[in-house]
Image (cartoon, rainbow, N blue to C red; front, side, top):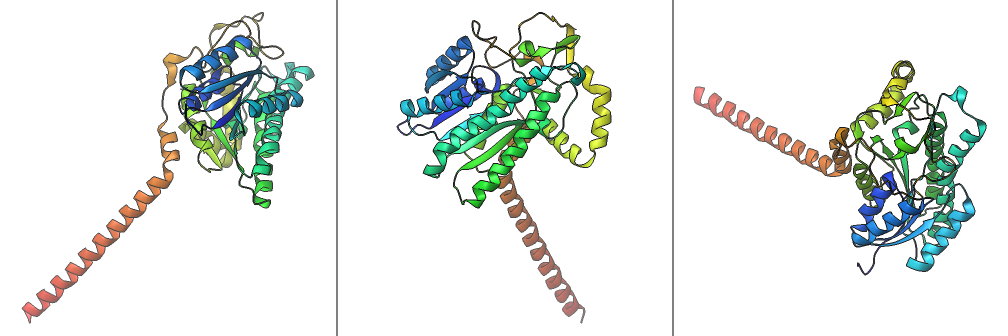
Length: 348
């Protein structure tokens, strides 16, 4: 165990991206507060962390309840000490045309996916601001910039998180605070959520390809927690989605209207009676782990992420190459002038 191990809190830690992120921090010996609702998933996450060399505290928490989040934060600090990094990643969604959504469903998704981040950020800042240190990582999505059909509540929440985070960042700058807040915007990921999300789709839900493994997301989260980057985009598809929407949003509307229903479904009819996690956890008695059922179609790496993480280094290399090219041109020009002068003298 590291002597000065980081203290980390991760919401949504029992499965998917949060579960993968917990393992990523555990490999560096972190002390991790694991926040989620599912008993079996949390217990398995705790064992994962400890087997990888970290310490873990499993805390059953519904992030839509600010009091539960605050109580969990206080427990983590009593057990492990001051929180260094807080990762907001808990989410809920409903796959459904908006016209078929109920007000209760929309409210629930918003309370978990948006207000859960607000509550986590509040508890983190309550502790980090007086110490003038700490990092908050918001697990975002390409859908924070470009909404898709059939997930109106989730997309709305992700947009809200982006706006909320920008506001907080501006306030931290105004206060000359050393506390850092960043967002990591994800592509489609192979997580268990597609098997337990509430769905009214005729066929089984899937992430819109290309699909990445949650470990790619976890590496991005860890990196973002230790580098003062405003945002980190993960995956080429995320870059295309965000940049494309800035310049051609109407094209995106049309394209997704034509393809967005089909691209989010696959592999046979959905079971309308299967359990979902909107109101209660489905991982209370069974652990689902970090990955979903799309291993064969999911990538273990992202070249774009590597480039984004090394853009400073690449910029330095570019400067050096540019300087080398400029120097070579100067030398070549000097030699040409010397030759011309020599040739002129010889001719005379």
